[in-house]
Length: 537
Figure (cartoon, rainbow, N blue to C red):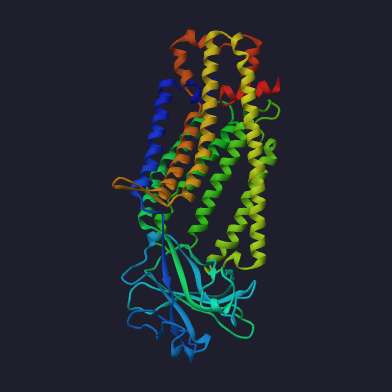
């Protein structure tokens, strides 16, 4: 049989392909580093203290022609006459003379409390703060505000006081952890208004200390980065889609049915195509609040398929004929991947799924929810560790089996020996490239966490976070394209039949029983057949 393109392609063409892939990889990094801005922006808003004596349910605006009656500090004489239930904390998003845009894709909000220490009003241990939150929107500066969401939520208030709790230290501020407040999956309006109330009675919001101010940190994706990201998806989407269709077309032209390895390679191409679909273009014109959940599903499908591909790719080059080409042979490795993916899906649905109807909800707000979420993450971590231990064991066995085949090379004719040496070298090289892609993902992730977000190089500013995202995205697209191209069936033998017949005789005829056993089983590559037979022996 003809084998795969990786076995029949000349070294000169392979070098050219490697150079082509390297150029595109560098371009993916450069686009993020030089052309794209930082992926996200964080803007800090100080909530305005509005007076609502009659506790009306109307919307209170912090600035503009209809701004609310305000106090600047709770130490003012006017504030002394007010009850805590008469105060509404109002935040207008964005700042004056600014507008929100659908290009921002999503908006997160984090709460930060300024709480002063008082001996007679200290923060109790494990206290829960209750927040009456509302969100409204409008698309111009003269329209009335339209209510979008309203909810009463509870959050654990975790604060530390770094100095001794004495009268001398009264007035100092606690160090409180930021708490998740809101997540919107779409920014379809120009202006947003947040109203917060901290209702107080005999059982609610007792022991939360003396709150002086509330800050809201708004986080959204930068529009410039969104444009670069969608442009990359628009380029890669048809490319990988056509490569996948082309690959399956060549598989369908073969006389035999496709084997498991060929099916999983096709599935890898399909999953990458699903990830690349630039649905975000449509979200610019529609208020699709489920986009964050959809993007998580896209990534989950791709990475689950990628992990299954790695296991099957190694296993199919390792196992004997009686066990190969059967998905059931990998039941526990594939089961780990599916189990971990299902756990993450449930966790995502319990958070972002609920956000479709209540963006203020957080699974981390309650003790039970926090314990369940941590347990899920811990179980997924164990599954990932078991998976990679199994994968590393398979990779070791594959290289050991290939090493056993190398020992048989001296007994082969020169032409076949040279051919097998090239095939084995290319297979090892592809395995090392796979490991390098996984390692680069981890390395880039670490650099992304420890870096300042940008580096200065002369007159240029390199956006490290953007380069990480675009570089990794480009790398996995190029990796999938390389697998689809190199493991597609080669039709080169058709030309050889009418060309150099002498070379065909040397390479194709069964010279001995050993050669027939090695190459007799049908499969995508010579390495696939060689490794399986060595394992059987």
